[in-house]
Length: 457
Ligand SMILES: *Cc1c(COP(=O)(O)O)cnc(C)c1O
Ligand code: SF4
Image (cartoon, rainbow, N blue to C red; front, side, top):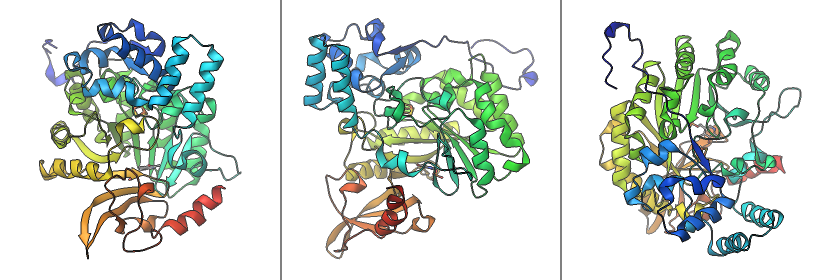
């Protein structure tokens, strides 16, 4: 931007960037994406096969500004957004490939695709059964999850998509069109009734998909009423988003960007803590002028930025990538918050890393940065009982163990109690682990089964 502002004192916000039309491509448009035309035909066919099963969506900003096409297929942002042949098992892949090659009927293809999807653990960690709350009158509140005492998750129906899709998405099932798998609501009234009655809730976390795909006026319908004194107990409004990575124009150049920042500013002035929980997977996502500008505008509006994202094979499985990411985030004013273990769903087989490796990456990254960039906790597994952090590997009295702790627990009393699992070099999730020191069960298991799993059955 070369505009020289004649009156800088008047510039209450940094200059708005040039608007950019939002052009998006899905499975049907694969052949229209110029950038992939030069890729080998078998790779393009593989994209069709994989995107018949897993959601695919990418936009022109990601294609033109984030992917280094000279480095494809290894480019991390290409891996993050474009379907790769090994994201399905060889047998699933060849079945879908055969159906496409012989132009099978829609019903035949759909049946096979539905079977494969159902086997990819579409709702990990009991998301649907265990966390859906009820109003005092007994009505089920769709679109809300209330798992940890302080924090309510809300899934607004207009926000159940993203500006592009991550190939590892843990919420992929919501995007593939099966109504049964959606956990959204458009009823602001139900959200507000629920929050009004829940005085121990301090944090509302608006999530998706990506709530930042919503028009500002929709977001305002959910958020403005929280300024009323009956919601004084809601101290923090968190917005989970990947728009800083996939569409930073949302904050700097869209038609209602200014209205969005003004909305956040009103919440901040009224005393709410507004937290943008930014999903990042690689420092390259931060590396554009428009992303920097978006971060600056959010900070100028008084929002706090925190970052989170999973550790993934093919995308960010080197300590240096995390070290650079965290350093740049701190520089820009984004506090690293969580590093996750990739959940066992969708293309998990492609992205998974042994817990041991995820911990090594985390530890070696932390060692390379200053204390201000060491604020990300992890690697953390979002499991049914809670968020379980791998604190490390230790040798205790001749036994090699994982040292674990809850960062969040269904029972708050579980949090921060160290517990121990037998070391297993291949384990990728809590389910793979056994208690150490000859114990039969982990300390929380019986209570979890009785109070939560039993109650849902
Ligand atoms: C992570 C998470 C939260 C928020 O936990 P914090 O530790 O407060 O960030 C809330 N609900 C669910 C279901 C979560 O997975
Ligand atoms: S931004 Fe989040 S919800 Fe959207 S595709 Fe990526 S992981 Fe899924």
